[in-house]
Length: 343
Image 1: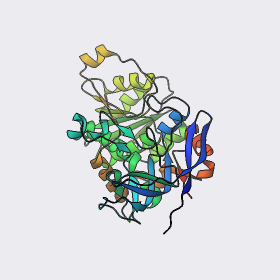
Image 2: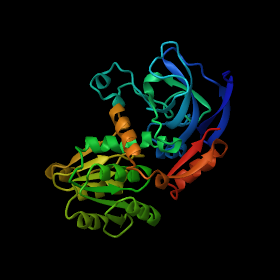
Image 3: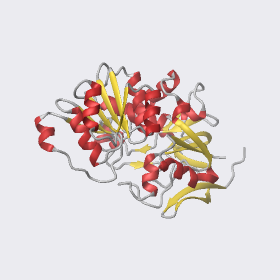
């Protein structure tokens, strides 16, 4: 098969997402060339597009939740082959620093990130990437389901960092994509009781349909009291999937004595915490940054098992030509996960 020499890709700058022409990259010896199929619009993408992401500067090349087919392999690549369907593990660690050598490559001291802080992204007709950042998609998963492997890995990682949730009470603040995927993970992991809050009625009802025991209006008069009443006291684990000032205060009050607050959403800015309460009530605040390979594997297993209602999470798929509308819909709040189809 003769590969083209030019392609289309999405770039996001101050004017928003647009399509530009670029050369098809040539994979290095340890890289593969992937032909894009689908790429998800992440909350990080919409934050970055509006200048609100703390680590992604404009312009950037989006697409880290992506599925494609291997079109060519570098000279030293043997683990994967042309024609295989793959998803990307977008962290690009150095493999040499203290974090990498201790199995925490997701917080590598020199971390780059494909589709965010890198010279390529997956919202492109072709992209090259190191072969060790690819995972072969099982035949049992559709392309659309495979596009959820990466975002689902984040709550898988969060639940593991929180010490598991089996038999425990859980509160999830925010019923966007990550909040709903966290709901799926904690349900599969055996949480005893799960309460979800959000400001939008449609998202609360979707959370109820997907397994929340109770849903709470995050704009209500006393969210903390409602959630604590629903879980029967303080929550063992609170997953903050919004990560703004109000939700952090709520999370600490909901977790209360001996609980864990896991910060899953990407904060746009610094927040304050009631440190005397954190100290005196022995509350653990746990940051959660992406995932590692074992989380990708568990995410894939959960999708294969049917633990995630894919059709309830992926609510729109738009052509790459309509990428500006895809970003708009993702940011508007009515949709959950919006995918971009690469022709």
